[in-house]
Image (cartoon, rainbow, N blue to C red; front, top):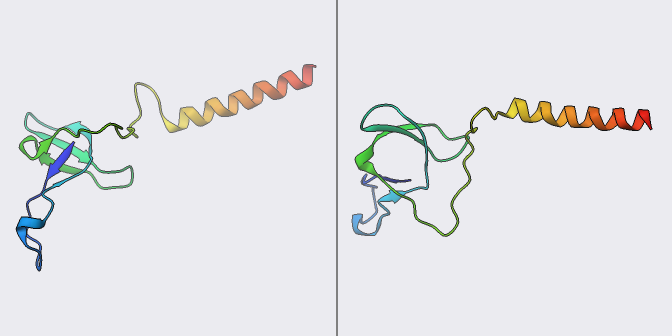
Length: 94
């Protein structure tokens, strides 16, 4: 999503400033007209009105950093450890 931010910046001609920033990821929908957006994994979340958003159009879409259904960073690290343990057991039995 792109976010509309029409604030005035001192020393800049309003005609030449960028009004839209992004891309942002919609983190959650907090109400019927408000959503929380985040620019990157480490950025703070902003709660904004849906009137200030428009779709982000590009040939290459950014990758989401939010976990999908049931996925988490902890479970991925546990899976990696399990795979290593399995490979060590197969070496011992051979």
